[in-house]
Length: 356
Ligand SMILES: [Zn+2]
Image 1: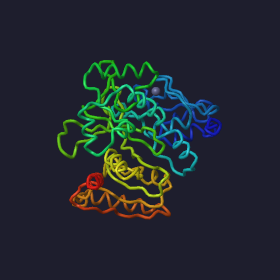
Image 2 (image 1 turned 180 degrees about the horizontal axis):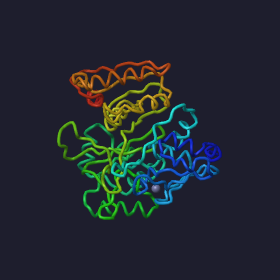
Image 3 (image 1 turned 90 degrees about the horizontal axis):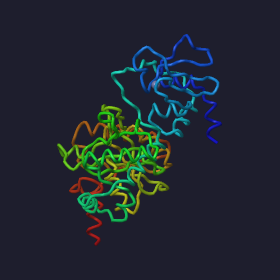
Image 4 (image 1 turned 120 degrees about the vertical axis):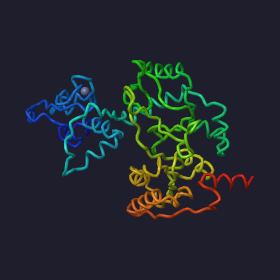
């Protein structure tokens, strides 16, 4: 059904909106040539990406990347096809200044959401949860059933098991080029990242957008979590600070907190209350859209109690507040609890323990 609609989105217009560099000599031809944003044409000033104005499809003659307007936009912006379609359906009056792909700055964009979700779901099925990680989760108040349901898994710890995981995913037909967390090492695919346990970061429909790692050995107490990413590594892919949605998505009230694991725990301890979790105080991009999509009426800020003492954090939280308050018809509240408890999850856990 989408296919028909997709084909109405002109490929050249989409390429302009993505800031691709077009070969002006080919404008008006059936095939318009552009610089390839995926392989960077293996050097600047070349045009290997063909845009077919008849079918509105693109194909790179060098790296083989191909698709239609929607998948091009989705891949370059790191969003789902559905989100890309929605954005492309809106008219724009200005285009970004075309940027020649820079071969030295090869920041590969993540695969579309549906592909990431499928690959990560398979990946989690191949992994287990180690005892020390299960104990950590039980200590946060999760039930064994909820630990299972949320699909927390331990990072594979040996080189061999990491390479095996990559091989299993490739054998199942998953593309690892464009999947944050995967990279090659002397030509062989493997997983990148410190030991710890993986936390799936989901959108409102439960699709896994990316993963966070709770590190076993953190350099500092503020760096206990890291995105599952292979940015800057051979064949690696960056991650974005995706927003995590957890709990009852039909709820009219959403709590905002920082960190997906905190949100999962707080939601579980508060009878599946809806939590929208930002990846960090500097990662509020997409928060407003997520809240607007959920159709909530009330937003309750439940950031850590100590946050307002740090000037930078305070500024970002205030900015977030202003941003959320611009959503029409949404009431904004600040959740307060006994400041002896740092996070909303700590507070809810103490209450749960007191009730027992
Ligand atoms: Zn290419």
